[in-house]
Length: 284
Image 1 (tube, rainbow, N blue to C red):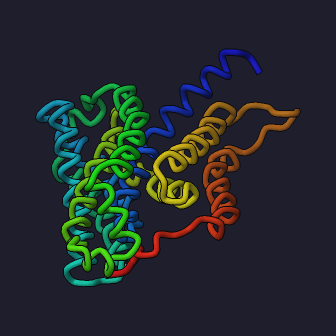
Image 2 (cartoon, rainbow, N blue to C red):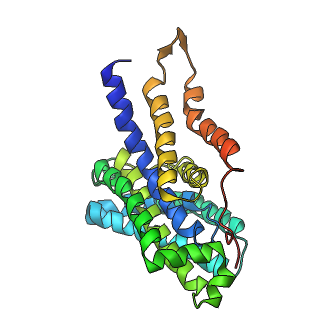
Image 3 (spheres, helix red, strand yellow):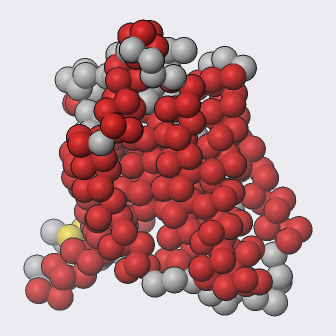
């Protein structure tokens, strides 16, 4: 394999893994506090749509901030549904994903400037990449050495015992869902930065892959990050070799496109039973 291919794959791996890492850290902030969160996909998608709409009006930084606010709104809706109204966590997450899938299409069609849809201003993808590489270290330090982080772990492990020592799970989970909104908001904005445009369902399952990486990593920030990088590597392979001849055979583009998802399923099948689920996950 030529050196140029190796460097290209490595660079693509980092860029493709970055939104997964950001979303996985968002999942960590909610799931480690006891809230099952399959809505990462919808939060990212809503952020991407709002970022694309706002960036043409208020610039790339303003677009990023609006995208984060949109993702936070979806995240806090999940907190309200699960913690205040005690709706099943999975049903709430599915509802948020459905709202995002239909709502982003409507919002972008109604509010986007058609003369600027192909030239959306955005920050450099490398800004997001660097943020994604630093974030897991910050999250690890937060949960390891701060009072807020220890409270998050305590609530996720056993909310009843946490109440006995004076910790309010409702408040801790609220803060966790705020963090989830911020991280998934940045992840969604990165998708717009990578393409310079917005398209329907542009997250393409990345939220689910990020959740799978979090599970494979045992709900720990650094192992989850490594899992995201592994998924990014397989995604980079399909980008690099799609349409190329390998061992005298040209694989169909559909086969390459399915590679990251096949790897996700295989990895989950191999690791799901080995990792220790937070004991308080899904408990009131």
